Length: 51
Image (tube, rainbow, N blue to C red):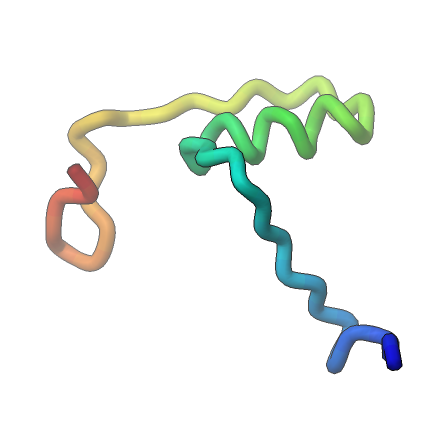
């Protein structure tokens, strides 16, 4: 039986691997949102490198 998402949250997954910035770009494009996604390879996430 399929139910509505708990708290309105929908998890997304699939066989394709995407970088986070590409995923965000696709989401913005799908909504015709003109904002540009800018990435910083030197940025930190919780005080550690992401790569």
